Length: 188
Image (cartoon, rainbow, N blue to C red):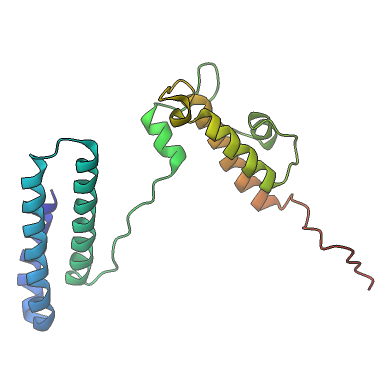
């Protein structure tokens, strides 16, 4: 797919850059050819990949080539560079495991009280303690800590959702008490 996009970018560059931005074209052309060569090398190495680490290295190289192509294509078409969408961990887990909810639950945290309960905290606990509790629970429930056992993933998704809800709730409502600064008195 990237190879076809690269060819399209080259054709666009020939049609439009050669007329108006000749200097830029002569800089872009070799860079697009380098992208094409890199894609060929990646395809050649794909047949030799035998393990996960090799596949990861190849994937990293492909991402680098894609980023390079994005830079070049943005310059060719004179538009801002497209930014890759950051992956949200909760969305990733939901996608990986269906709707992300254990059986018998709605799958969504709708209020702060439920979110605090899911994390085993008292209502009104400050964000720093919420973060600490979330991290402890996540470490307990994560499949890596359970020797690959993925049976706790639905609960992990729920506490992640609860943590994200509380993070937003606490930042919007400013329910955390201010940090104590010793014996400061406003009358002084």
